[in-house]
Length: 154
Ligand code: FES
Ligand code: FES
Image (cartoon, rainbow, N blue to C red):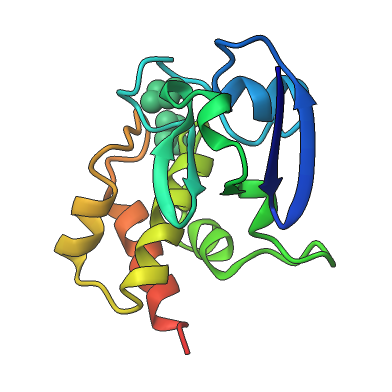
């Protein structure tokens, strides 16, 4: 089946088997490997992308459900010049990245939060990131990073 959708501002088409997930579509058919597969069943948040403004775990969304819709992935956050988005930079500055496997999903959840709530409390941040698991950092630096990014909001 063919799926046509907008990914990171560009219209993309792909021919995929019917049970293809959005995660598989992104990684295997569109070559966007920044989005990670952790558990594959909606529990770890590593595969989080933004679908029509809402964060979703792309491993449990079918590609067919995304027909005509708009997806933002970690690749779409940085500027065309390669300059990092403020959330990406804040993760680096706060030391919130260790192995990095959870990081794209964390950042996409944070981006969805900040687009709706530009100045969240630390509790708001913790709630927004509750579905994103990190085995390395202990979460404090991740919350620090999102809070720092929020302070750069205009
Ligand atoms: S890989 Fe999708 S939630 Fe874990
Ligand atoms: S930095 Fe390793 S899982 Fe989060």
